[in-house]
Structure formats: C-alpha cells, structure tokens
Image (cartoon, rainbow, N blue to C red):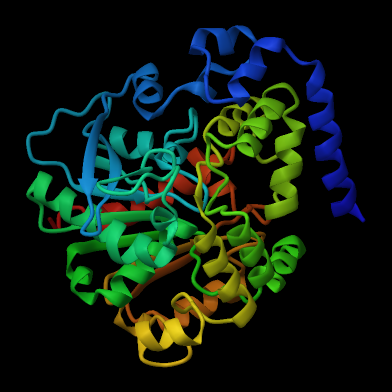
Length: 416
C-alpha cells in the first residue's frame, strides 16, 4: 500500500508542475534554453552544468577524451589529471571510474560528495568513463542513435567486453602505466566482472578493483517493483520493440525531462522515485542535491540492457543475454546463454557493500564473494541504513566511504 501511495504521489506532483515557471517548459522539449534562463526559472545551476563545466566551477581542471571502440561506438571519457594541491614529481597512479545503470561520469563529481574530487585531491589521475548509450556516448561511426535501431543492440555484456576494455587500454596508452586501479558502482561493477571473466587477459591490467555495491547475482533483490518488471520482462520488451522504442530514459527524452523539471520544483518527487525503485530512505541526501542529481540522472541506456538485467533477476543466474533459442545456438553453440565464469576474475577485488542495499543485497554479494578467487577484502559499511544510492550521493560519503576507498588504493599505490 505504501508503494502504491508513493506512485500516486509522483503523478500528483507532476500535475502540480503545471503551475511552475513557464520558462522551465521549453526545457522539456529539444530546444533547450540557455543555462542562465533555466537558473532564473528556479533550476539549480549545478543541475544543468555538464562534467567539464561542473568540475571547473569547483576548481578542478578536467579534460575530454574520445575513445572509439572496435565496433564503432564513440565513447567520452573525462579526466581530472590532478587535484587542487597536487604537484606530481612522478606520474600519478591512474584510476578508472565506471558509473552505474542509467548514470554517467557525472555521478562521481556530485558537489560535496563526489569521489572523483577526493581521489584527485589525493593526487590520483582520475578517468571517469561512460558506456555506450548514455548522454555522453550517443555516437557511432556509422549508426545514428535517433534513427538506427542497430545502435541500441547492446547490454552490459558489451559495456564490459568492449567499452570498459577499450577505456582501460586507452588510459594505459595515455599514461604509459602498466596497470590501472578500478572503481565501479553497481552496473559499473557488473561491467568489470563481465570484462575480466570474458576477456581474462585484462586481469593483469588491473591493480585493484574496488567494487561499490557490487552487482552480479540479483536473486535476492529487495524491490517488489523491479521483481514485477522482471517477471514480465519478455512482454515489456515485445511491446517496446513493437513501438520501435530501443532507447529508454535518455536525458533528451520527454519522461526524463518531465522528471527533471518536477524535481527542480518539488524535490520530494525524486525522493519518491528513489524509494519506489531502490527503497532508498528519504533522509540520506539533501533536497538541494536531489535537484542537482535530477539534472544528471537518468542518463539513458538501451531497452536490451534492462531486458538483460531482468533476465538475470528472473533466472537467478549471472549469464549472457538470452536472445532466444535460434540466436543462442548461433551465438553460444547451445540453447541457453553461457554463464559468466567468475573463477576467471583473477584481478584483486575489494567488495564494499551495505546491509540496507535493496539491489546488491548482502546474500547476493556473499554469493559473489564466494565465487571470486582473489578477494582482498569484503567490507560492510557500518551505517545500518546505507542504501544503494548512498554510494554515489549519500551525505556521509566523505566520512564513511571515501576513507575506505583511499585505504584500499593506498595498499597498492606503489605497484605501478
């Protein structure tokens, strides 16, 4: 009943948005007004700044890099080469950061809590990656994401085997380092497990992988809404295909813009959405930060990616995409998709989890731990109410999470 009431409250709040400043409504549609106009109409400035502008505002120099994958996707990777007080006498250790589902590199530069700032100020060379299909990686050498459905035929399998692998190689080439450290959140950790199990030659390139709210198995997912979606995942995918919908929750799409506008004026809309999909407590972040986050999340993905996750929830496996018997025979040589062999993930792995995470539940993380051969540590955060989204935008990141991340990085810092 509580969930139903929260859903209704979201729609009620959206209706209330009909009375908000008229300057906000052009933003819902493709011709976005200038930042100044949006701010004047009540938007938080940080909500409408991109990665480069956001980091510049808070005193950090950042760079934009382009990575072209072997299958033609053009990915954007942002680099913060140094912190505010870092004068390197030796090359700094590179760290690759990978965002979660429906997010982007922006998730690591949220003002006040962004882990990328903490790492840069600790004199690491920070590289914030983006996977294909999000707001910063909607380009291809051949396909138009707005016209060609072929662009959207991917899931977290390609995020790991191609996107993350290409990013690691690019960073190693640019920095001339032998290894990179990796930090991922949620789907970002999924990409890592996919890469290192499917392409084990990448294990020696990883100094340490720090996995925040690690996601592989999803059998004990605590959210009833996501369980319902996964139960009807094939029917939902069929309907989306029938209406030629292959991109979902893109930043430029109407539902995302409606949500963003609603959250700017009524932050409790965002609180309700976070609770409905993540069972996230409402006091774990501030209203101001919710308004900022609404400008950066959701950042888009493919319908196939959500379908792949739903398959894994439903089947209690960590396996490749199930494309149907005929395609499976063609792709895998068998009727069922192949499982990811976690025994091949030989890179050193740190799992950082929490007891109140409705997505990466303790039971599923423990199962993951038991199947990984090179666990450095599994650390459970002390806060009994720390949720899935607190790893990237919770109030207590500087006190609870950041020191542990730095501690694990420091152990391997001299192993360049």
